[in-house]
Image (cartoon, rainbow, N blue to C red):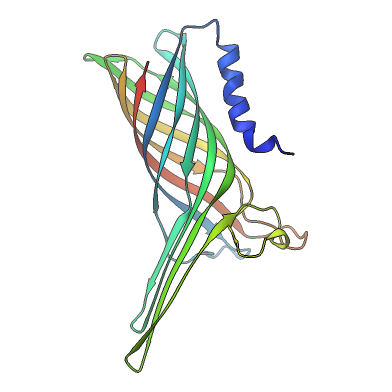
Length: 233
């Protein structure tokens, strides 16, 4: 369905609608991400040996509304990058690759925000759902034979897919389109406007695609953390 990429945004709009009568504030948020994956094959062994954190970013809008004294609910709509990096350096060869998928994501955090000094302490947790939009993959390979160095550099757009048979020519597979999970956050809000927070996120969805209609026994889950700055209007 063509509307499926916009479902997280539709969910965010729903929260805006049901909270229209509440004391609410719109804000913006942007910051730095670092993501990796938890990967296991059917035998429980690591699927992507040596995967590392892949740096990225997130940006979007938030909507805070008061539930009761010091308790808030905060849905948001974010554009965010995730993925992972692999780096393998040997004596006569090296490989480094980056897979950076793009998602539109709707987290819904439940916040406890007691007064602390001139501002508020922010403690929160909640679920998220995300829809993959695409992304970019890069591969840098180098080998040395008899003193001669040969390079093999490649790049391609990433494709989200449920089955590897659906992979289009010239694209690299990342994983299934939908991701969901949980996150926690901690931060501080200055003068009810400017805020700073750190968050950690754990994907619960297995995004490893199937093959030829056969359900995969391997598992891949997104995991990462972020640091961001927000401003409430």
